[in-house]
Image 1: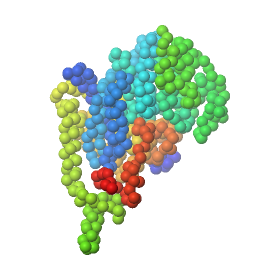
Image 2: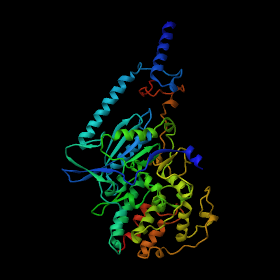
Image 3: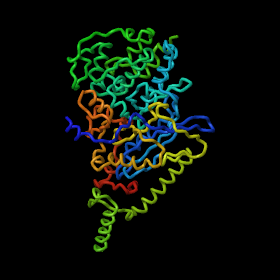
Image 4: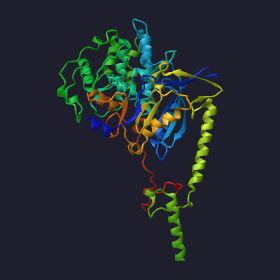
Length: 298
Length: 205
């Protein structure tokens, strides 16, 4: 096993004792707005910056032209050549000082008021619908990469080039990202925009619960925890060509979602069920979710 | 007459040999605009890059090269990463994998030595060969979660390409339809590949 690891992996960086250094942020003296820098070091070869990176920057800039209120603003992309093998791409983003995770943690005791949750959800789906309509999948939606401004505006971040892979999380026994992962991704079946809706559903439940809905510690464990709530899907819904067999899971019937999220309204529970549908083809789309009666209630 | 033709074609070949990289040097290579002065091209590129960097530097009053704030419209400050959302953390991208930068104090000018050391490991010849490795946290997560032993304190980048069906690639542009190669090659009567350095132009009938 160790030998295997030696062949297949190589050491790229050592992880320090928890300190991650600093981030540069600035206030525009004219507008009063804040910006923050995020740099991505891209490995290059004799052909320079990989074409895919160039394409990705172009795409991020194209999305930027729409100036969507629920997507974090990318103000500039500055590239500097560091060495022959490396280019530093610095992304200048608008600075938002908290993410949804902090926002939920800071919410006082009974949790967020239902109207606040409805507003956050509406904005989140609005941003997601924008990305999906431009054929962009987020694929890693979680409270850490949903920014919430001091005025309560939701901004999706961390898709495309700006995505980070935290080694900190990878080395922690509990890998947070699994918790928002859809069954088709966990099963390594084909996937598309519904993966983001699944994550949104998990986040929706978390807004009420103030703790994650499914906290698996491996792919199989994650699936088990999901089926404990939504029930084991019927044989005909199980995707073909996946390595995990349906038979390794104990047949359980679905539990009412209100058991896990008691604070949710009837219409909210209905929307949540539509989002946490096993079959990605039957899962509600961002566009349809926006016109769900839940958003008309109250 | 035939002598002239011969020598001109020989000249073309020589030019092609100087102009095109080894893999493109086939009999079909023709240099239509004479040999390329690579040194001049490199100089022009460098000066253009400097121009762009200078523009960025002035726009943000920030030296992106050395991570140094300058005086100007923007009032820069260094914030601890714990005080800002995780999203703003720096990262390193190698192939399709992206990992955050760990524990290196930013802004210190002399950090280049240490960083270069860390990075030369990343970009060793064998690493460049594996530049298409497109594995990332997901896959590492699998390793972690499958209960296999692993060394702590190390970030491992799997070198093998993952199956295309999984989540490992991080590019949003992957979801866009692949652009077809220029149709010029198909249009022409001869299957001559269009050299990269040739100015694309319409055929005159």
